[in-house]
Length: 134
Image 1: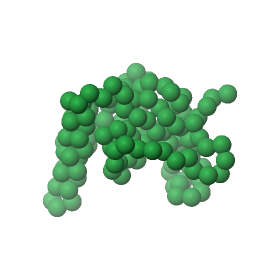
Image 2: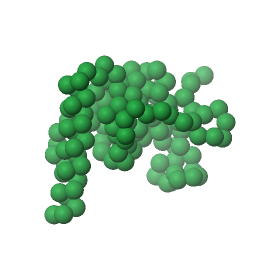
Image 3: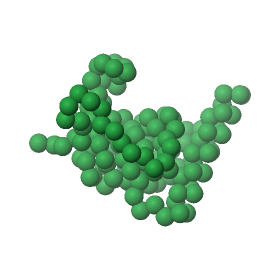
């Protein structure tokens, strides 16, 4: 049986985050898996994304983040900490029912890479704001 990392009861699992996350939506690629996803939130320590397939808790993946505004990309190594199937109900649109919400933490984060992540977030925020004022 596959462990999807979901809660074992009706209560939502709580995650402790060391970095704030932004509610952003941009495409992700997983080149080693030939899959894609879309972010729900993104921060310097990890991200949450929607996927059509489940991921194994503990699975290591390479994530390519693509800023649709500037076309810049950032490649990050991550570890899956949770993967839960979405069902119709609380806050889940029909479009996302049956998709998986996957939570990952970034691994092998050296200071230079953390700086690049923060720069990517700042660039995304700036280009998103520019789109709204144009």
